[in-house]
Length: 195
Image (spheres, one colour):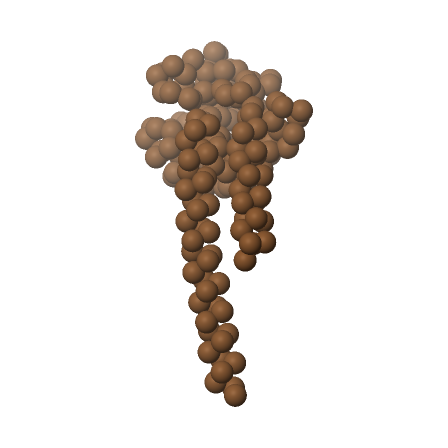
């Protein structure tokens, strides 16, 4: 039993070292070959939000932010990064209720931070019939843009992430101990019954 406690504690220490690794700076960098929006709700009115008008395809811009978000500035070490694809309607809950959305993705560092990426491609908007999509054209600075990308990020403090991780880890330890105890009891019961 002592070995399992040592392994469990060692894994917790390793996870804590991951939580101590510095993350890429937020806000994320501006999207290359794109124009940063200064429209209401895209910059200073909402905390931790920025938006860009761009011609980039979905995979190109997600890859750009994933490359940036998946490495620590400390020795360029890789960070655990999970990519989630959410229904576009969720963007109204996370960013603001008036945001238009074609796709909505999230890059997560577990127990650390999240970067939400909302893209609106007016030419492929599934919520508007094809013959009416032209009314959603994205015109900014006398140019028509195919895509508008809105970013929102959430970041936790070091003390908060360590507290939450160790709380979850201790609950997991207690539940694991009970579960193994039940399995052991069941095994003993079944072996006695066979005799």
